[in-house]
Length: 401
Image 1: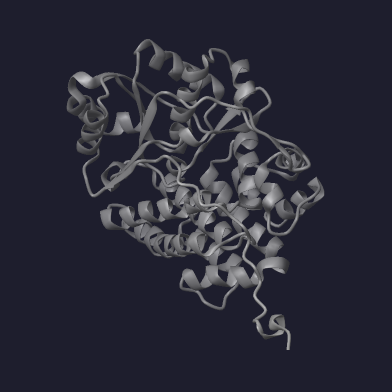
Image 2: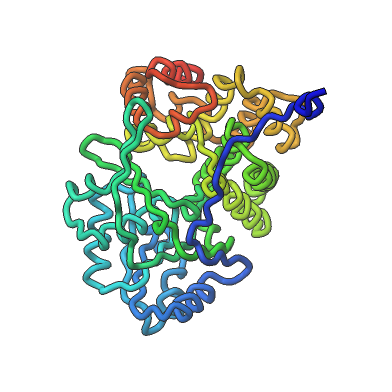
């Protein structure tokens, strides 16, 4: 008997490489101002420039607490970043940070501000001072799925992020930034764009508008689900995504029932952190993210809402090829045996978030435009069920028109 015939029939897992991105520390269980002051001292930072949320500055004393705790290390602040990080706002912040001679950037707010800090650092490094200067730095995905990645220098200035939402960009090496002239949101990627330090403090999230907290929580759910349902998933990515989804599926409704529950909020933050494991584990996202990027940059839909709407549609469209993987989603959410898309829709309903494109002002008249732009998003080309033409994107959009 040949040796080969005695061996079990084992399907080889997809080849992947785990990448340890250069993120040094994540703080949780410590007040944000104490953690930041300690980090600034540890790094020897003398010119700490804070990019803050305008709504947070207006609703709390948090910015003043940062200023006081940093003392002589505080070099200035600028508040306000529109959704989807437009180039013009990034330039304003870049000029302010340059004038302040910043040696450390701190972002204190939501995902658009986190990306803004990454872009400020990139612009400072490459001397960008007008909207056209961004073009040479962006990653380009062509309609056939091929990509062009420019050779960027690593930003010399580090970033510390204090997030107030759950979109997870603080654990990502990519920044999204919108060219409002098109309008399209573009990707900018470098390993050193990831913030060197993240400070998770549920107390700073108490002023986040409830709709924003809950919808960005669904964004984190989207990360977990598209990780678990990817045909390139692996045991490392699955472990984090499964636990992150379990945490989020329980803690988001708890936050809805009691917005002041700090334990539920911290569980949401940890779940959002675990949802981003796919980046290091080499697992790409799919159509929910790919279409969501376009709905955000082109149609100005908040990214949390794009996930609420598009994730069930993507699951249903992909079910012919990954229904066996989708079963793990329902089980992790405590709903074994039911359709994963239905489990997600039920969670969206409990959180009272939008579930149709018409509810966020996107009509069929824009579907061709959205589909054409989506073909230039890298995650469209890594969807479990292959997408090769805009008409297929339209099919997914029609499921939630």
